[in-house]
Amino acid sequence: MHPIQSTPQFIESLKQFEAAFPDYVQTRDLDQLRARDYARLDDQHHVYLDYTGGSLYAMSQVSRHHQLLADHVFGNPHSTNPSSQLATRLTGEAREKVLSFFNAGDYDCVFTPNATGALKIVGECYPFSENSHFLLPFDNHNSVNGIREFARKKGCPFTYSPITIENLRFSEGVLRENLAAHGTATNKLFAYPAQSNVSGVKHDLAWIGEAQKEGWDVLLDASAFVPTSRLDLSVYKPEFVSMSFYKMFGYPTGLGALLVRKDVFPKLKKPWFAGGTVTLASVMADRFFLDQHHARFEDGTINYLDIPALTIGLEHIESIGIDTINQRVMVLTDWLLQAMRGLVHRNGKPLIQVFGPQDTTGRGATIILNLFGPDGRTLPFIQVEQAANAQNFSIRTGCFCNPGIDEINNELEGNELLHYFDSHESGDYFDMQAHLDKMRGAIRISLGLVSNFSDVFRFVEFLKSFLT
Ligand SMILES: Cc1ncc(COP(=O)(O)O)c(C=O)c1O
Image (cartoon, rainbow, N blue to C red; front, side):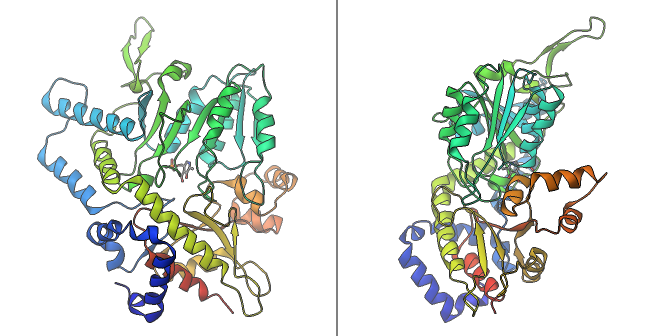
């Protein structure tokens, strides 16, 4: 226990918090879980606030997986020998587990190295052409933004749909127009994040159906959504879904998935073949047959030792309950947003600006903010991060691989950005800041499955140290 937790101020704040948010008490099991399975956090007095960067693993996940490896002989799958058969069975079970977790009976599960690997398959294999269109909102991770380069190579035009500076949500009217346009295009792909990795905004899943009605295929990037929210793919049925598993349960890294709705599977045109992806290939005949299912997109030997750990990770989440996780992180987010609003300098100027939604409506547990001095000037986020590092807080700063949001928040102009790119052979974020003489970046706080009141309380106390 951190010494702060025995101060009268903490005890009183906790009492008031529990009275104001009675739902929190219903998630008490998570406190026991944290003490048992994530003891390293409190042993080291670590305040972990970067769950959107990567979730934390439970020690029980690691020991179950290590026991599995210690107890069995695993071999490269898809052979008849017993070590291979075991790997085939356990990787198959993990695949089924992923599909059942998301209620995804209509989908194939392709294992990938991460969400980026999943997005790359769609980018590379979607039948973009001069007569198709790629539509995406400003709020996207670079691994989605990069798909525009696959589209461009095939002559496919693309459109960025704006988000509003006030709440960082889609400009709904414009998006409706964008979706209604391109009526004669043949293959139209609309890609958006179920939850922003930066602002925490949940972009309505109803856009999936709206886009499909207008003839679009939908690529839902669920990476930042699924760690704390339920995704039911029997209710919402995007054509493609991407995710990384370490963002859900921390261990193992190096695995993600592309879920492909079975009826659109043939639409993805793989540009080559490789080991593991074919049922037959010939050298003399210069012909090959691609596998009809997930294996078509799993190049080379799959990660057969780590994939069984996905079953363990998903069982771990199920044993807690994704709705319980959601309930807890949203209550903590609510308190945190309110507490931060109350932080004002002696001269009455606010210490903090939160970008995007100011309350918990239609958002997740990721918050983007900047700190300001009493003169209203932004405190460099590097300074805040260094102070946080020194006190064992894991926060994140920068633009989080999501340049669209950062460009909106800092009110950058397309022309000045173009000028920077066109006048440089190479460059980086800090050089661009100096060149434009404009701020870039912000501070991101994100909560996850074992966040507790002490984490957010200590973070607010940390913020108070910047008050004048
Ligand atoms: C919304 C979103 N999409 C995609 C990614 C890329 O994930 P990965 O780096 O695991 O491939 C991330 C990572 O932060 C993300 O938050």
